[in-house]
Image (tube, rainbow over all chains, first blue to last red; front, side, top):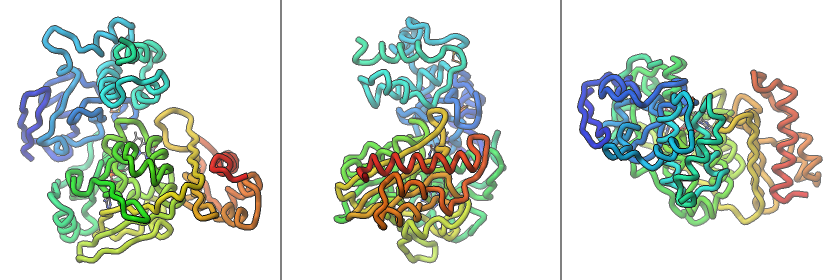
Length: 153
Length: 276
Ligand SMILES: Cc1cc2nc3c(=O)[nH]c(=O)nc-3n(C[C@H](O)[C@H](O)[C@H](O)COP(=O)(O)OP(=O)(O)OC[C@H]3O[C@@H](n4cnc5c(N)ncnc54)[C@H](O)[C@@H]3O)c2cc1C
Ligand code: FES
Ligand code: FES
């Protein structure tokens, strides 16, 4: 089936099998490999990207479901050389070690602040419950999100 | 993991979706948010030959005031249910339980109609519908429409009483009367499904209690309700929570532990709902 998805502002058309997962379309067809596949069973959040501005797990969506919609991946957050404030906060707070969870974590965090610009620490922890990190123990991730939030400035 | 190949039909209206169901019968599956169906298809536990995508039926995403009830479109996503003013005011149990479903990403995709049609004993919404005495409106490919009470909706393990050619269009929830309610969900990790859960809703002096994961289907704790009607205290009534139940045994909990959880969580739910 012929689909057209707007990815980070650019339109991408391709002929895909209906069973193609969105994450495979993004990684293999569009060629943007920042979005990771971790569990492939909707548990870890590594594949989180934005569909029409909201965080979703792209291993649990079909590419055909994104036809005609706007997707933002981790590659689309920065403005040229200028990192997105959330990326900067992750860097400044040492919110990553191996970095595998990071693209999904950052995308989930941006979506969280869009919905709740001044979260409490508990709200950040609960808001990131769909994203697993095996390295950091989460504390620095929570710090980063709080520092990027309205309340942290 | 990718699903078995299938034909994809994107419905532009409920009529188109029903026509596709009429044409393909039980070869076809509706896909709303896809957050139960697609994981099952990836694991090849489900392999419909036709997927009918109803995810874009925006006219079935709404919350309306229906007088004595609120009417929620079947395609309303969890996030939109949880944050809706009418739901928060008139069905606080539903708003609260919905905010505990999965994680934000799941709630951006999953729909109330999909949760109920999936009829999973481990899911949260069926217990809410049972405790609030709600119903669903089902439209059929043959043209008719019927209202199915929560009590008649859950037929078996992952099986609703919907016909393969029927589609839920609306969910109706009687308005909360201002009496107590509570939702308990016990799990080991954030984001997980309930190991056991309890929805309790008081209405006009009596209470309905429904349990998550205590039987092959979502289920009312009738022994608890009857004990309360007979004058038992919350603590006494909660002792009946596992009576007549058939909980499963899995790596999270055995039958004894699930039964214990049901009693403890039911007591908490009743007491938090204001029953002495
Ligand atoms: C990681 C993860 C965690 C989750 N955690 C929880 C949790 O804690 N608690 C919980 O309750 N749920 C949980 N869920 C399930 C989630 O709530 C699903 O969104 C929901 O069960 C199904 O809704 P859906 O719209 O995605 O349905 P779909 O997956 O699209 O459909 C599910 C079934 O219902 C049928 N169907 C869908 N819509 C209709 C309709 N309108 N009429 C008739 N049939 C229909 C489909 O044909 C299919 O058989 C979780 C899911 C994931 C992926
Ligand atoms: S890869 Fe999608 S949630 Fe883990
Ligand atoms: S930094 Fe390694 S998984 Fe999070």
